Amino acid sequence: MIRPELLAPAGNMEKLKMALIYGADAVYIGGEKFGLRAAAGNFDIPEIKEAVEFTHNLGKKLYVTVNIIPHNEDLAELSDYLKQLNQAGVDAIIISDPGVLMIAKESVPDMELHLSTQANNTNYKSAEFWHNQGIKRIVLARELSFKEISEITHKAPEGLEFEAFVHGAMCISYSGRCLLSNYMVGRDANKGECAHPCRYKYYLVEEKRPGEYMPVEEDERGTYIFNSTDLCMIEHIPEILKSGIKSLKIEGRMKSSYYVATVIRAYRLAIDSYMKNPDSYTFNKDWLEEVSKASHREFSTGFYKGKPDSTGQIYGTSSYVRDFAFIGMVLEYDQNSGIGTIEQRNKMVLGDEIEIIRPNKEVFKQTIDKMWNEEGEEISSAPHPQQIIKMPMKEVVSKYDILRRERRDGE
Image (cartoon, rainbow, N blue to C red; front, side, top):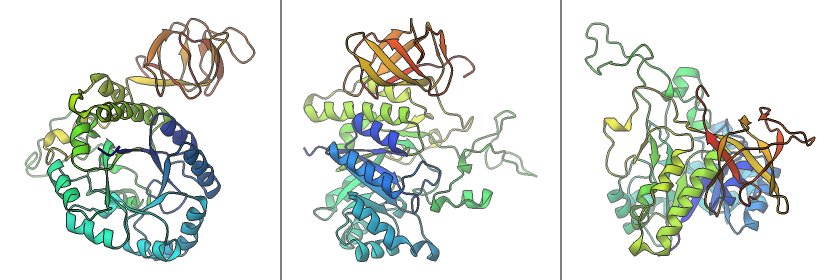
């Protein structure tokens, strides 16, 4: 069996490094233009060059999103931008529009081209069409079942790869093509500016026949009629790989470094365990517990098991489940003293029970029994954002290891 690719989101340089260190085989990023996450900490060309160098030094790959649905004015600078990406050494670009495809083939003929989920590929003949246009990999539409995916991959032309989302936020529109944000606030979701109005609080009112179309049973908070569950397929790694998917994609360029590291690490463990011995593979519930410790909505399997029913929506709230707080990241560790230098990310105090997440080792727990500030003074609390502190570590830690704790009441 060919080893699949675990593909991670990277909204900025720190997230990119965390994703790769915690087990991703490749990352996808957005430039300052032409991508669908305008609010993410996108990369300019010098940063893309730096990101490519860091990624390639680890023997991994970097892809850049160029997947907006462009208007005429968007095309003027596109050719030069693609040439800059090519010179930076990116491994592929992700596109959705036929016009962008044509410009890419003219401007950077040797660039590997991936087709975005925005192109809504849902059948094997469309896959064949896009492959004939020069597409190397297709990111399948999210609205496909395992049965449909298996048929597409089985009937696909030789050399065509398939990628699919396996974890993260789901969209109520068709593979991300949505005009609700345009209508509500004048921000174009198809050009990277989605305001996520599907997460807003709504009241459904039928003036003469209240409740006819949808019973409204929520309280004064309203009803979240557009709010979808989050996708989580970590329990279904064997089915995913047997369906012919080459790249397992995690959603979340706007999520935190902690989210990226936690989710990638859990999927890395699950994939590696399966690849080591598929015949005797058993799912470890600790992996699901790990992804549950990152911010998320209720989980579902999306369309993989068939069309979602009412359980695919969340009608009571748009809130995330946030049971754990990312409180710090290790900057360095002194082997002789056992003291770790930590960059604070959320408040921590003496007596806190914390967990330390490491890329290639087990999570361990300890209590914070001592802390010092940068002046070497003992402190009882670290309340300041990105405050540098030191503390004794129960086990050996390394740069980029993560500290977390359960959230306190009211946080």
